[in-house]
Length: 121
Image 1 (cartoon, helix red, strand yellow):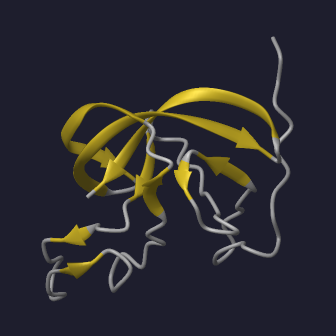
Image 2 (cartoon, rainbow, N blue to C red; image 1 turned 30 degrees about the vertical axis):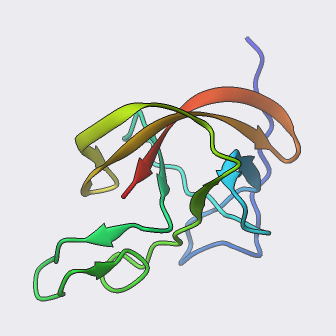
């Protein structure tokens, strides 16, 4: 079985969680970073229009604000193929909804494959 060699990126490591360099069609950030959630079977990206409905004492707002502090980098440029919508998907402790896409992910500039991506609105 082929195994992709994924190098971690110490420049974007977040609070002890390793990140890795990758590109996904639909994300135009210069240096996006990605966290792995081994409990999830979905690849979730945070849309540039992502909003929370309010969590605990935090009011509704952009996903880049407290308490989620997500990097909202999925803007659909170039727009991957839309394959539907989703509701109430669980990822990293969050329950999210949005649009499902087929996109290409490449690790470190190679090891590319097509995957389903869940764009959280």
